[in-house]
Length: 280
Image (tube, rainbow, N blue to C red; front, side, top):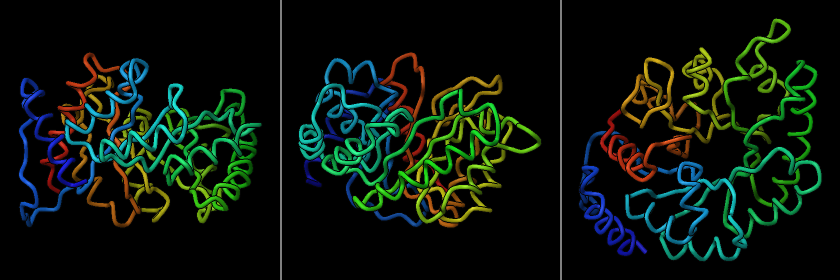
């Protein structure tokens, strides 16, 4: 499988030469601390996924990515997803699922995630109706605790992914703090979106430092000075300083994402190139 991965990376380097991506050698020793695995949230390439899941994952592997996080399976079964991951040499430690699945589709979502080979089943967002009061957030936290028990029984870990609204003060509190307090740290993990917390004026350093082990997943997204989303490395977020806290925070998986890239594969190649060379 390693040889196949290196072959895919090599031909990917050739096809993406226009983006400045070069093939790298295998097993080159280095004393610098760098990411050993780089992932991508497949929402970035959702239009391509709609056309062909198989071809999209091949291209992602060719760029050099090691891991993917799903945001829908586009009509493929769990078995088909597992097969294409095996064929491309990618792993998929996580998948996003809509909060609506908690109502009556959670059992099915857990079963699919287990077959597909995921470790984390992440709710992507909270519905607006549950954001109007802190009691709404507390209610969601209670629900998260309950469904996380079922995920744990299946060998999975439940997670929640933030946007910016969790950092807008409500009733004198920060909803994100309420979610952290009301969810069981042993059951509910958080996927910190570094763009959204930064855009909202939150402090990612504070949360990564004060809540050790709560953040096994991060979305690596960059922000320009005007607040817009840009390719990783083209903005203002200090990823090296953040990643230096990875051991304390418990970060295990780093997923590149761009919500609306001009050209998705050029964007993900540029972000990969930056992260592959980032020292921290």
